[in-house]
Image 1 (cartoon, helix red, strand yellow):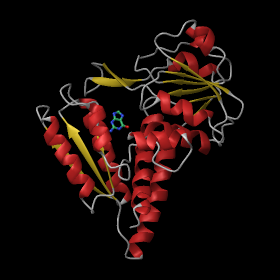
Image 2: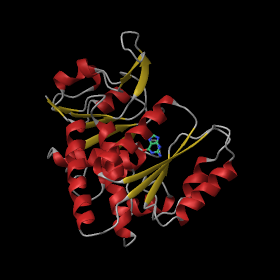
Image 3: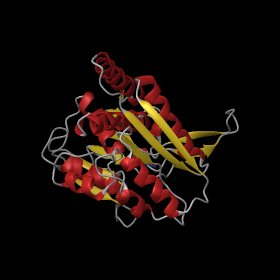
Image 4: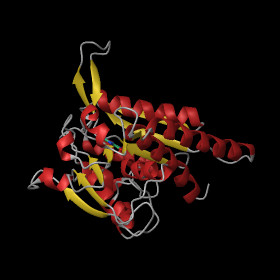
Amino acid sequence: MQRLNGKETAKQIRTELKDKVNLRKQMGQKTPHLAAVLIGNDGGSLSYVTAKVKACEEIGFESTLIRYEDSISEDALLDKVHELNDDETIDGFIVQLPLPEHINEIKVTDTISPNKDVDGFHPMNLGNMMLNLPGFLPATPAGIIELIRRYNIETSGKHCVIIGRSNIVGTPLSMMLSRNSNPGNCTVTLAHSRTKNLKEICLQADILIAAIGKPNFVSADMVKENAVIIDVGTTRVDDASRERGWRLVGDVNFNEVSPKASFITPVPGGVGPMTIASLMMNTLKAMELNGK
Ligand code: GUN
């Protein structure tokens, strides 16, 4: 069993990006600038956004964090999105999800300029992804693809089972892994809450990806010998033995499953850091695409 070390791989990517930014600085070119909008005080969202800002600092990107209370109106948020679209100093920005219930997530995502949509959530970017045209790829699926690429894991002709059909992970990942590219060319099964015989389907997977947010959902009896296991889950569970009172738990029962796996991502330190690294790659790309 080999661990897919997302933490180390993401660090390597940050170093590569830092070198590129330094080169740009030496040539008097613009530094990439990422803005992040965070609404409310959800602990998970706050730690993700904090990690994104920290990654910018490490690489030498500029970053701007914009915070609002949960009570912000949809109109006020949309005004801010328009302002960021028009702000020439900002190359890309994200609005951290989920949003409070009174705000329409689709409306907000659709208002972000596709050229600055470094999360790759805008319908234009999702459509381009489906057609294999240039655009921004959603950060988590792109991070998983990059991890697979850097570990030289063979995907062509493999059966990949993805559990979870979310708009930001499962559905886009099913397209990215099935298209004619490398990594890609998988035969993909997208399983979800209505799937029958889930265990039997998972047992057929050469590559099993869990993205449902249910701690330890994937047990050893669902996994084929030598399968590649990618765990996208990051649920906070209470843990009195930790000073902060919680720990992150993935969708895969790591201790049970890892002896059967050929490769497996840990939680934390697997997919999470790769998501942030992809966002950084998208931000540099946004600046270059916008001709700066
Ligand atoms: N919430 C969970 N993952 C993400 C992400 O990748 N981007 C944004 N904006 N919100 C998220």
